[in-house]
Each structure stands twice: as C-alpha cells, then as structure tokens.
Image 1 (cartoon, rainbow, N blue to C red):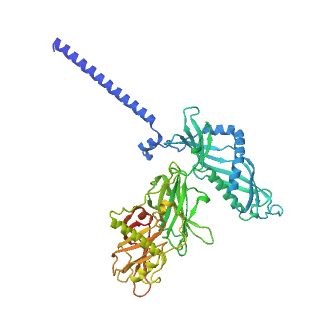
Image 2: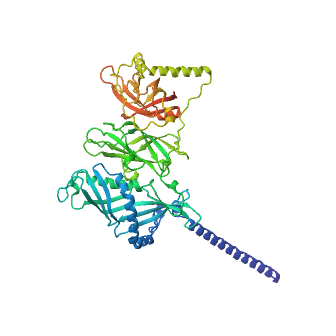
Image 3: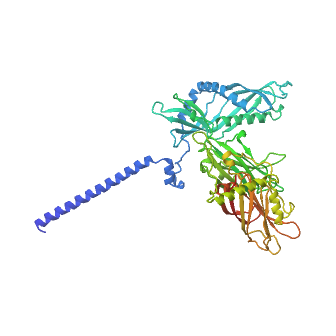
Length: 608
C-alpha cells in the first residue's frame, strides 16, 4: 500500500473509531437518563400503585404494607403529657357524660350519677395513623388506638327495689357501682376542616369513632352484690355500651373549634331518608332440630336500640314473605350503611342468628328504586369468614335526599298520559266516579266477591287465604306519595315453566290463585290440564288502596277432583316497582318448590 492510501485508510479508520466511541457514550448516557427517570417515577409511586404493579406473591418476605403508619413518637408524647391531659379530659367528661348516661337510664333505675371519673395512670396507645383521601375541603385521619387502663369510675345508682349490700337496705338506697378493668379498641376518624390560609391552616377538629368499638369491663358494687337485683348488671352493661356507641360512633361527631367561626354545618344533621321494604327471604338456613325456623329481621342504619327496627315473625318458613316497610333517617350518605340481621325466633330462649347482610348507602341510586337480592353471611363485616350458604333476602330500597332548604325530595312515580280527546277525559271521569260509588255504601270488597261468584271461583273454603291484614309496618309517606298510592293493578298471568309434577303420570293440572296481601282481593285462574308448561294468558284487575305497601301473592295448586289440592309453590310481587315504572314483565321463581317459574305482566294505573 502506498503512502497516500495509507494516510486515507488511517484517517477513515480514526473517524470510524471516534464515531463508535461517541455512539457508545450517547447510548450509555441515554440508559443512565432512563434509569434516572425510572427512579424518579418510582419515588412518586405509593403503596397502592405498587400493589397494582406487582403481584402479591412476588413480594419479598421483608416487604409489608401496613394499613396504618406507626407513630411511636406520638405514643411517647402521650405518655409524657398524660398526667396533665387526663385531668383535663376527666373534667370535661364529668360534665358531658352524666346527662348522656341519664338519658339511657332503664326503668328499674330511678337515679344515675357519675360521682368519680379518673382515667388512671396508663395512657392510650396509638397503633397507627392512616390518611384518608376525600374530595372535600378537609384532611381526614383514621387513628387506630387501644386503651388497657386502670381508671377509677364510680356510678351512684338508686334502684326502685330493695338492694342487698352487707345488710338489707331500704328502697331507693344509692349503690356505688365501680367500673373496673376497662379495655377499649377502636378507630377514631379525625377531620381537620375547613382548610384555611392562616395558621394552623384548618378551622376545627371533628372527631368520632368510625365503627362500634370493642369494649370490655367489669362491674362491682362497693360493699354489696350485683346479683342482688336481678337484671341490674345486664341493664348497666347495656346502658354503658349503648351510651358510648350513640355518643361517639360516626355519624355522631364532636366539633372542636380551633379558629373562631361558625361551624354549625359540621354538626350531625339529617341529609335524607332511606325507605326500605323487606319483601321476602329465600332458602334461609334451617337451624331448627324439628320443623323449620320462625324468621324475623332487625334492620338499622345507626346501631342503637332506638333506631333499630324489627319485622314481623313468619312462623315455620324458610321462604318467608314479610312485605314489611321501614324508614330510616340518614345523617351521612357516603359512610353509613343499612344492616339487616335475620333471626330464628325462639319463644323460651334467645333468638338464634340465621345470617346478616350490609348495603352501603353510597351504592344506591338517588330517587330511584333499587330492587336487590342480597345473600346472607355469618358476619357482614367479614363476609369471607364463613362461606356456608345461609339464604338470601329480597329488598326494595329508595334513598330520598333533602334539598338545601331541608325539604325531602319525592321520587318520580309513574304518571299516566293525559287524555288526548274530550271523549277520553269524559270516560276517565266517569270511571273515577263509578269507583267512588262502588266504594261507598256496598263496601270495597263487595264487587270483587260478586265477580268471583260469577266466574265460578267458589267460596272462601276453596283455597286458603293468603292475606295478612293488620299491621302494615313502616310509614305511609308524605302527601306527594299518597297521590300515587291508589290505583288499578292489571295482572296478566302468561305462563309457567319447569313446574313440579304432582300426578302419577308425571304431569300436573295447575291453576293459580292471586291475592292482594293487604287488600284481601282474590282471583282464580282456569285449570290447564296435564302439563308442566301451562299457557294461561289470563288478565285480572285489582283495585289497590295502598300500592306502596301492598303485595301481590300468587299461589299455584294442582287441581284434583277428589282430595286436597297439592301446593306447587308460591311467590310474592311487591307493587312498589310497578307503581314507579308503570309496567313490568318478568319471570318469577316459585318459593316452597324445588323448581318452577311463572311469567307475569303487571301494569299500574294511578287513580285519584
């Protein structure tokens, strides 16, 4: 190779080497930049994001995501200031707690006073603090705490009966009852609100317990025996627990002003009403050794006795038709929930729990009917603790908020179209007048029974009556609701499928009896011979006085010329949904039968 080619070759080679080095440097720099970006993004990821990005099974054994952040420095602070802090708290509690306890005083106690209240030497311990994200102008903290203390709490109680102390005493002698071994576990909700631009950057502190706390304590009578007065220990135990729950558990809240201002809007107030209809239950767990259970339900939004409602008891049924209505005041739509507990009524012993369920109010539509089947579990707070089937319950739920003026808003019930012609208007007026005439004088049920006799339906002994009569349960609602409660219910019994075979030939001769549970009106369909898939296509009309609380009950029988008619199942249809929507068409599963479905068309026509 000559001189000049060697120079050119060396020059080109140098350029290639320099370009390669430059490329490698740029590539390594880009990698470093990407790593820095990844690290910067990782520093912004919280534990919720990491849970979404990384499966739980890939976590190292040393990685944990506790719900509450530990705050040992606060516990140290509480221990140091507790001698002074307990004095301040004790003085405030003495003033506020005594009226609360007296308001829950049972009838057997004539007087109840808090004579001594000292929180003892041991400060509460905070298990941790969790910051809760909210959309409001506030900072919300959940504080996990426990207190195993040595308080000195003495209640002075006067009973209405003689009490045995060391000697027999007279009626009305004051007992000195000491509360000992007090232990409390719970979670406080602390809200710093509203946020402001001046120090300390929030106007007040609002605190309450998020749920009912775990409380353990013992009661001891100074110089006497608690068992001397039957029921006194249980009454005091219930009194203390109920008073703590009702005065501290959310939505009850306590507002401590930090910056002067008007904080009345932070106090507890009614923000709406929840209307609940407990329609029916299906396949409830049978706890009875012989026979079946006698189920009833208790319902509450706030877990205190005065706000807890109880349904009627349905004897000997695992598929009860309750049709029981309730109303509950709502103080916090976002955090409160409806809890339903089903029990087996025992006449001589305490009722046995069948199951329970909970529905968060925030999940319900506003001013729209929610029709739900809810499965029962052993513990609504921990649904996965016991997965054994316990049955389900049918609920109709309607949440009605109040407006800014405190007026309860009404739902949009179905309204029939206005008459288009003068002839239609005159016909409607004549029909309304005819209904008024029928209801006056001869009575409401007379035309119905006459129609039954004309159709050859037989007397009252033909099939058993399904009407309850008596108690309706719940409230009637306001005047706006009353306008739409009366109406004509048109029922089309369309067909049935997969019915139970009752005859020797593997078929049945089904017919249906339809009845209003409260109104008592009854209709009977024709018999369809030798089939498990009957086609009726029969239409019936009922004049309904209270569509909000009434129920259509359908009982299916197998027709026999001789002997007792076989029961093929039954079902109940609440009228609330058809009253609000105007028309529904659906298949309904039969109760008290291994299988079977009935197809119905229901139409509601309001009348004045």
